[in-house]
Image (cartoon, rainbow, N blue to C red):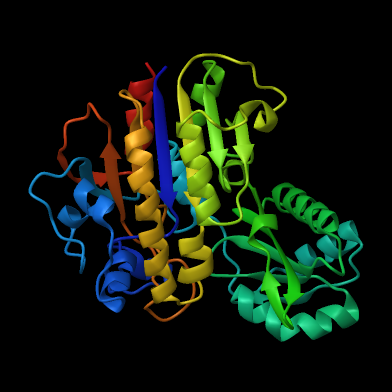
Amino acid sequence: MKRAVIIVIDSMGIGAMPDCREFGDIPECNTLKNVCEYNGGLDVPVLEKMGLGNIQNFKGISPVENPVAQYGTMIEKSKGKDTTTGHWEIAGLISEKPFATFPEGFPPELIAKFVEETGCGGVLANCPASGTAIIENLNDEHHTTKFPIVYTSADSVFQIAVDTDMIPLNTLYDWCEKARKILDEGKYNVSRVIARPYKIIDGKPTRISKDRRDYSMVPAHTVLNEIKESGGKVIGIGKIEDIFSKSGITHAIHTGSNKEGLELTLKAIKDELPLEKIAYPDYKDGNAFTLIFTNLVDTDMLFGHRNDAKGYGSAIEEIDKYLAKILPELKEDDILFITADHGCDPTVPGTDHTREMVPLLIYGKKLAPENLGRITGFDYIANCIRKLAK
């Protein structure tokens, strides 16, 4: 049975796109290069052996004479720099029209509809903000009013934060589902509604990553749907099922950290995941093609958005250590794709995503290494998978 594995290192861009200024970014954006420089180089021997250092001059990641993987740079076709746009394009769906953003906050009529539909009484903030900063600044008022903290960013997101020791997690999820419906019915073209639960830990508001949920727009047909419809498996690890709004997914499991996502990916490759426990109700068991699709979000959520270049570097090194375990477990016909979905350079001004190109590494025990050069379109991966699945 043929299998493919996609590992998305969330936000590990490798250089500004030519149109970066249209998205509010500067040409100096280069998430991986600048993280490497900040840390005086990274210790990533597996990624180095695969050819990451052959793509570009990254401090501490040397080019190798005989890389074991195919390597190249992918240039996004879609108009955007967010998680949804990047992942959808990886799965073969090009977004010609950018999702809407709200630099002045959401329209009053949208907020009024949200308050009416949810019965939450009101909202706090309604402005672009750093998630960690906004919950610290408004936590006291949130506890006094019990109003949810609603905020956005430079990306197309409607984010709702609550202290789940005061407002139950299921209530937060219900409010997010209602927000998603309101946005869709009003044709606001908002990419994601994000549940941002937090708790007070050691006196400080702290977001709970494992309970985060994303409520994306439903994508049009992707390679995931093609695999599912042909009797194959699409195993989403991390926030993959949220990004695709469950469309084209057959099995899914959420994660609380990169480490958990990597452990689960390793188990999936070794056929050790309890698939019967994470299968969708409509899944019909088959022996066709299997796609294991993993998102590793910590690089973006914990380090990129928080301008933590040191933490970002450590996260990449952790991924590399797991790749040392993953590569030997791949079967003879398995193909592994390692890439990113956008940038989030922690060394440049701001805390938002950056419009960047992304790396591509493709490894298989029978696959001949090759310099793929510059590739137009993240959908190159979807097209590769279509060929593998035949």
